[in-house]
Image (cartoon, rainbow, N blue to C red; front, side, top):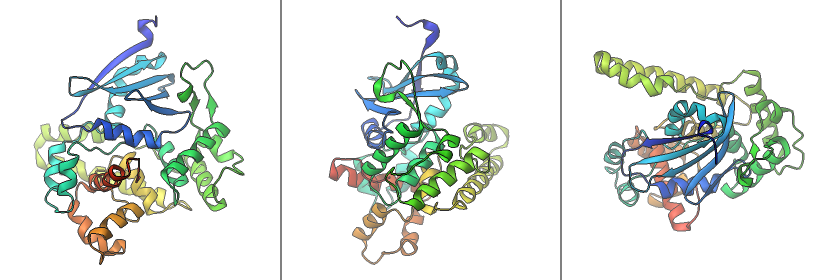
Length: 332
């Protein structure tokens, strides 16, 4: 029996509807081999947080409107602090009614919202991991990207000794280790390898900050509302936008990283509900299928701008439409 001091349970509430099966499908198709897994209707991984290690298992509660997080190991002492990042990762703070009310005004999106009213934008445990995956995934399929990231883990990552779960027994490579690694034969073109290691070096050196500080995001708007109403809410939103604009510019300035990568990271790691990866092939094809005259991203923009401030959710609905048809994890 595990000692009580090494285990904690969190219940993280959400606003219904919440489409847990599709959230899990998204994570399952992109799970980093050796680091995270989806099995028995749960998302699993080993973590390090605040200097402590342990494992997470996240499931939907059978009856209540919440996710249940089981935390094992020394990291369980930080259970309270883990609630906020996990709520962001699983997009629990979103008001699905507000998203649906905006997107359902568009005749293209209305049937998609009706079919999947609780669709969320799945986040990421680590912004660094997500950027690595986004760079690896440039111009390749979701499956191919997953395979290559798995190779990176076993070549450069660290195996966790005596870990009880084989599918989550590796630590993802650190920025410094990835920057210095020999990646010959890893399965990527030389320019992409250079972009990957250039990014890792920028993070390792502190030249680029990839993990967004969410303290203002989590606390700013409610606090602003308590102080003096709409003026402070707008001020808090402006600060958040400036923060995102600066992070976008810093990431985009790195060689080999384009707008698609930046917007994908903004969607999932930085939690920007209005992010839009305009050059995503699946999204572009979905729009052209509805209006063949809208071939280029610049032509599509007038239509996609009407989905603000929830363009990231529009992207998820369009990706999800393809995934539902294919019965697989497509898009993103």
